[in-house]
Image (tube, rainbow, N blue to C red):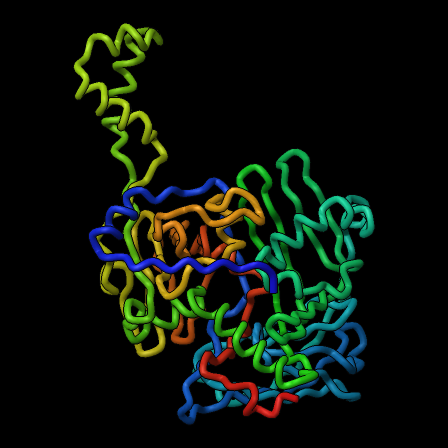
Length: 448
């Protein structure tokens, strides 16, 4: 599974506060917005829960003829089917809030049905429109595009974790790459659903890609996908044990884990700490900058005119710069950044940025490489600040408006910007379906 290094530190609160103050943020962080076009996750409660049952017929809008073999699935879950020879389908899913039903057929526009939280049964008469291709003149040929952009796309979409080494795109020839030189942005399209095989977690994943763009200057990544998961067939008990272990490892410290832990206010108990980031006092930085400017750039003359203590203070403020944030070392309680709307909904509402630190395990070696904590792949971990060795993530409300989180852990919209560990982890190689149960035991499911 690739190289992994574990460093264990016993840290008291006083030492941790000191380490927080010295936390360095790497410019290697990727800013991530990803949409799974879903409003909720499937719950993992072991108690009896009602079902949403849907049936329907899928036809061509042009002539009303049935479409046999169309894919029908609940977004980002393992619940799906294909239409029969008459275009009919039938599906049931656990009722834990609103859902999205995806209907997909090669050569036709995808269809999305939003299903309300109170729905018990629905019948759908779905008509699919023929897909029109409009990008042929600007799209790079598949082979040429993959040679030039394949590695970057794989790192951004599949990830750079140890698990990514065993996650493969089976039909990469379906990808089309468009580079917009004016904005230095890479866009990626897929002619057909992408098929991924993740031997690390034991999933086959079908991905309908709506949008993928990456701004090379800002490192801002945005993608919108629909995905359907199926269990891989295990060749041995060893496979089942490996998948169970790897899935739990990916889950711990993930966004899914964090959001779910908010509902019973157990996030602290489960290893998460939340801190508020404090923006710098620009007035003081500007005041000192003006003092230096008055000497027309003759820094030596200015520094000779002030005492050593003042000079030390000036250097400290100028070194911080206008973009440097500091961390409030008092960790936040639930009510300081969130509120409970009802039994199934939480609202996240905060100003500025939050640091979410997971203390349940040390960050993966590959993440330390990606963020510059480790100098280069293969180099040892020399960092002694335990905070830098943890899974640190940052949350920001881009529209400065509250967002809803549902009981199983999904967010309602894409107005939440994540950076740090969450952004690094939210890749397909480390992606779990929304009906993942962290208490599942594959050996008891008969998944052989």
